[in-house]
Amino acid sequence: MKRPVSAVDLFCGAGGLTHGFIIEGIKVQVGIDLDPACKFPYEYNNKSVFLQEDISDITADDLSPYYPDGHVKLLAGCAPCQPFSTYSQGHRNDDDKRWTLLREFARLAKELRPELITMENVPKLRDHEVFLDFVETLKNLAYQVTYSVVDGRYYGIPQHRRRLVLFASQYGEVEIEEPTHEVENFMTVRQTIASLERIAAGESSLNDSLHRASVLTAKNLQRIRASKPGGTWRDWDEELRTNCHTKKSGKTYPSVYGRMSWDDPAPTITTQCFGFGNGRFGHPEQDRAISLREAAMIQTFPENYKFVPPKEPVQMKIVGKLIGNAVPVTLGRVIARSILRHLG
Ligand SMILES: C[S@@+](CC[C@H](N)C(=O)[O-])C[C@H]1O[C@@H](n2cnc3c(N)ncnc32)[C@H](O)[C@@H]1O
Image 1 (spheres, rainbow, N blue to C red):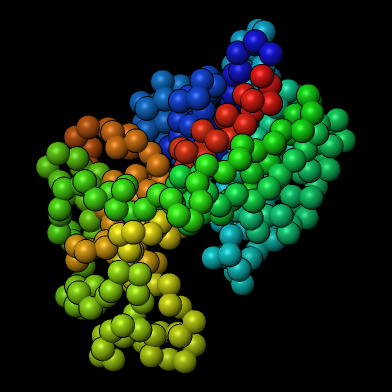
Image 2 (cartoon, rainbow, N blue to C red; image 1 turned 135 degrees about the vertical axis):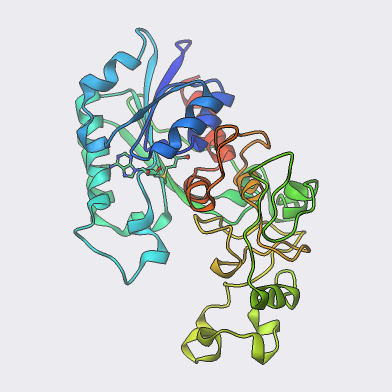
C-alpha cells in the first residue's frame, strides 16, 4: 500500500508515542491531552498540533479534518494507566473517571472508523472488563484485533518496562515486530546516561536545565552513600532504615531507596522517578537520584528533546509526570514499523 499514513494521538502527553511515529515516517497530525504542560514539548519537538481537550468532549467531527484525503487513517492512544497499574492495587475505585476513558476511545473508533487503531497500556489492563469490552467493540466493527505484552528490554529500551500493545486493522492481523535484543545485549544504564555531566543532589547543569537532580536530606544523603548499585536498603546499617523498613510489613518493599546498576537496564521509570525514596532511582555512582534528563533518556527520548520552554523554570513534579507517563520513543517506533510493515 503506497498511501501515506496519518495519525491522531489521543492522550498524547509530551509526545513519546508521537515522536516514535514521526521518526518512522508516520505523520501525526494532532495530539490531544487534558494537561496544558504537554503543549510545549508536544508541539516543539514534533511540529504537530496540540489540542488541550478532554477526550470525552471530542467527536469524530472534530478529528476528521485532521486526516488528509487519501491518507490511511490511524487512531492511536494510550489512556491513563494509573487505574490499572500494579501500584494502584488496593486503591482501586471503580468510579474513577479514568476507567471510562477507554470507552471514550472505543466511542471515537466507532464514530470515526479509522483503518487502523493502536493502543498501549499496562499489562494489568488485560484483566479488566473495560479492556474486554474494548476488544469486543472493535471486533464487532469488523476489525482484526491482536494484542500482546512486550518487554521494552527486548527492543533496545534500557529499562524494565512491560507494556500491553494492541493493534486493530481493517486489513487483517497486525503482528508486532520481532524483538531486536536479548539478555546478552540488553541496553544498559551505562550506555544510556554515562556520558552526561556529573552533578550533585540539588544541582542543575548550566548547559541543560533538565539535567537537574532533586535535593536530598542529610539522612537520605547518608542512605545513598550506603547504597550499593543494584542493592536495596537491606545493605544499610540499622540506624539508616526508615520506619517502614524496620517494621515487619516494611520488609515487602525492597524496591525503594536503591541505586541502579551501570551494566543492567534501569527499573521502570515512573512519574516519581526523580526521588531517591520513590523506587530504585539512585544514580549508579553519584550520590543523588537520577536527573530528569537521565530519566528522559532511559525513556529513549533524544538527548535534545525539550520539555520546558527556554527560560521557564523546570518543575520536577510536572516534568517527571510527563516523562514517567510517556510511551518510550523506541516502543513508539516499534509500533509504527509494525503498522507500516502490515500495510506494506
Ligand atoms: C499515559 S499518558 C500518555 C503518554 C503519551 N502517549 C506519551 O507517549 O507521551 C496519559 C495521558 O492522558 C492524559 N489524560 C488524562 N485524562 C484525560 C482526558 N480526559 N482527556 C485527555 N487527556 C487525558 C494525561 O494528562 C496524560 O498525559
